[in-house]
Length: 77
Length: 315
Image (tube, rainbow over all chains, first blue to last red; front, top):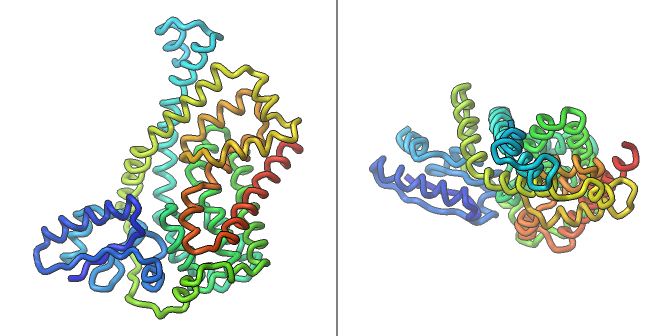
């Protein structure tokens, strides 16, 4: 699954990235994680507040630092 | 209780400089922290019902005027962090929200801070809270109208024009939330915000305590009193470089008012601290040319000055 973490590089975005890593490892499977910090891309993706996370192109949430558990349940869903 | 600690337990002398400062410290710390916890909980809970996407849709294609007013009101409650300023700005424009309306939103979000509003209500009553919200909304509304009239679109950075017309990618899923989940988010918000800002608050209380204990009664009145033309610009000048958290500035406001600073000057000080922040300006310079940034800061600063003078004159 393609995991995209969107954020310009602020503290919250880095925290979200940190939470996403263990979640990806725990869920097993083949995951690829990408950090997107290009504003133009964020706009095209309809992101208004950061950090945001998308799985396989679907934007799951924005403006929130989700916990590892939350991300894990999104990965399993 | 705080007087008991300061004067009995620590045996400080009432009316002495140190005694009054320590009493303020012990009285204010638990009070401000408790109020903050309560305010953050309520605000974060309410914010789970608002999200920027819905606000954007409500504002798109709105005409100037009503659009500016709505944007300013939405700006108060919409959850927002300064690192989201750019995506939000671009996302609004892209969805057809006029530039002036977008500016109203951008001015209102930091200026009428939802937590500051709650704290003002809890500490000084509804009149001052309403005054703060009302004047903040008026400034946001007017600034947006002015900037919209000036057709500043040409002062956006070049890449922005491209980003606004590029085709949309991917899909956005609307998040559904249940009541327990909203409560969880509110608890999380309290942990996160109170956990992060308590040093700011202690610093604010310490400054407040120093003012309360050591600054002579008439000094603030002479410096920030209503009878001096320079008091409002002075308050703004002191306020702008001070980048404090909304909650951290409250004890300072409390001490200033207690020492005879005029309400208009104090409001101007508070808005300058919270509303005109250097970090946000730097972030926005990625999308706006210097000229537009300067207009933005200039219009908002003028608004704050006018509010200060207005309230010093009528109250």
